[in-house]
Length: 318
Image (cartoon, rainbow, N blue to C red; front, side, top):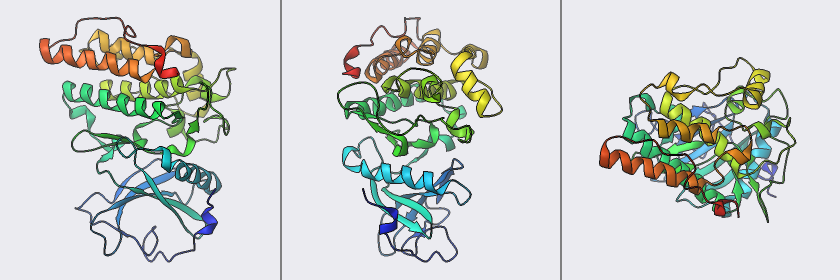
């Protein structure tokens, strides 16, 4: 594996980026896209290069060793990632002990920065279809993302979705269960931003495998937030978040969004089931249900109730 230490130190005069890179102008791409407390995502230009690239760099006050490991893992997966649905890693770099990773820039902004509350319902439903479709393509490549949340979902102006933040991803050779480092929330020191979207089995407190259905739970939290503007649970610290995912029922979506169609609420609650067997079994099945809901809305202007998971098939687990 390539080491961050293999890349020479560079000068960072007045910026958090290597000397060979510069931030885009404030009006030409929102140079700092977002931060989750562990890493920040920026859009930058190389001098003499006509198009921008993305840089994910560790936050100065974060856990540098852990960030370095995740960026190395993401870089190592580059050949398995398709630019149709992923921001493809390019080069590892560093400033002193601060690691970073450059990526091809597909355009767009993290979902965490978008004003989805102002988006019409049809637009949110269409976006949900594309989010689920990107995850389905990831799973077909035999990968578990392990860290699906709005910060790691890039949405283009045309609505195209690309995944990023593969530092906790795992290969799934020959079966469902992932192999690799400890679960996402193995330590209470993990940032609440990460714990908010984790599946119960990622807590390390269940004797259950972490598999693609874990990604579907995390996607469920994201879609719940997309459709209601709120999270399915409220918590104040890491311990409360873990307890919520393990033991608390999600707040009914209709509490936050009374006009949300019952069929869509049912999809969200199925994704948020505590046990993997009660969730969607494949991202493809989720895509089918969301697409069916979108078609009903476009044809009838409403979405009559239908059972969530009726179109779910097991091939996504193969």
